Image 1 (cartoon, rainbow, N blue to C red):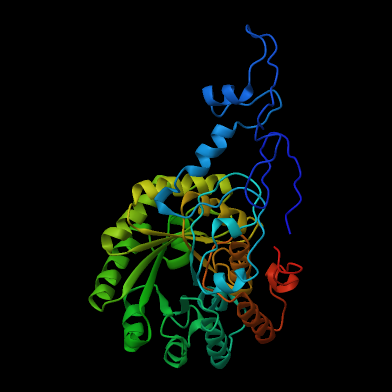
Image 2: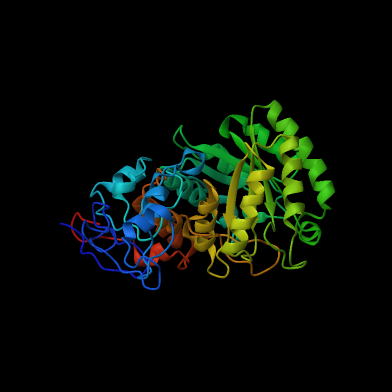
Length: 420
């Protein structure tokens, strides 16, 4: 059934087939007076060819601009999502969960052409970032069960634990037991957070159980001292040794930079400082760098500017965005990152997590909220949203409290009938 067309001032209005309506398409024989110009009446189709991109007296965009932009290839070869209201494929959810992006024709969107990636990568960090932030220690058996539920969703990257000192982080004192007990599909890349060389040596006792390590530090000197008791330079020196040892064992290395977008103690953190640290991590052997909005201070304008600079400074490096939803801006920041070219994100099921420093830093963006938004945008994740929601509900039962995910409360978007 065709989608009803409604006129919006200043823009061509697309039908379900993508054609603009009669008014803005300049039908044959239509002429528009141009007052005050020598020569009198001129055909505005001719003016459109002469000055593409200008507006006529009604405020409508010229057809030349619309066609030119529609033909423009996406940056980096990514799929272009066309403007207009679309009728979505009734099998869209199954395709997105299977990791198959929707064609631009299948994506319901109003607005201009956007260069979004066809697919994104998600690393689930709830079993580490979320569990470490709980006031009570979660039983090992419950951790293993929840991690295995996450593995059944189609998530291909899961951070399962951290090898920190048990006296410092008793919630993760069972790291070895969790890592040795959990059973995940062969396509899932298992990662562990490593604070230092001692932590890596403990993890290597179970080398065959994981494929990646994540080494972390803060961009802020004050936050780094409060969090790990070291200067930034000392942390970089230690991570250089950790990465060298990990690479000798065939492990993939990610460097994670906390307070990349702002520090609760120092305020603004210069972008150049963050990118200098990122470059040092890459020199040390990191093939991926994650930028953390540790206390939810980032905003979309800042995110666009930040990743624009990061892609210029770090060509060929996988750049990952790790946003917190402390002030409700997490998904807005995801959108800004997508528009900037980011294709890799970290999130936590149920919106679990936060940061031990400072107290009160609340959770990461919820993985199910992220997946729901991406699927509605026609961006594939390979994740079964229904199974992901089941995992978050199971976590609610284990923790004995409601979690903060919006999709967990409202459920996924449901469209009546086959048309979407």
